[in-house]
Image (cartoon, rainbow, N blue to C red; front, top):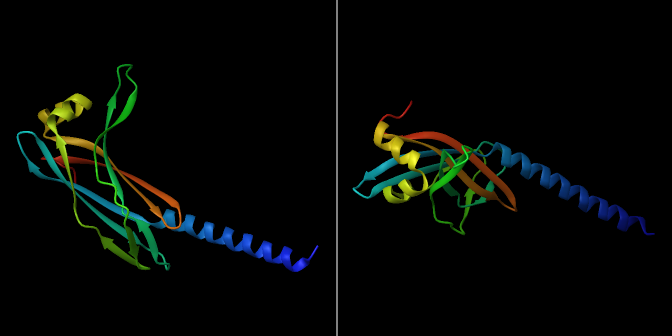
Amino acid sequence: MDWKYLLGGAAVVGAGAILIHKMNRLSKELETVTRVNIFKVTLTGLQLQIDVTLKNPTGTGLKLKYPFVKLQFKDTDSNGKEVMKTLAMSQVKNETISIPKFGEIQLPSIMVNLDFITLGMNAPAALSQWRSEGTIELAVKTITTIEPNIPYTKTDNMKIGNRQET
């Protein structure tokens, strides 16, 4: 057996392991700040404005896919079991974003519509909460992939509506 091939293979495996460890660390250190505001209320529903800021507190520049955002509501099913119901979601974009080291990027606002009829059919408790309190408690899930292929997901719980908590 030729030792130089064995050492070369070990070096490639070692470099790959270091890269994977570094990318996993970056996935844990990437921060997203997500805000959801009611942009417009109509007779048929709500138009929500989602603002996402991506923050990179590391000394390495990042490339990641444009985030996908899901708005979910905690409800109970017919058996009384807690379930998360998706109320609305953003469009999927095959676009790569670069964040410089120690930098941040504010993405353009993402607009989604939340129809009252759909809300009443899929999550009647959310519609009831809106009618009685003027607010809806949401779980906002931000999903992206850091290149080369490291998944990143963050869920923020927030209230939207007239009586938001500060």
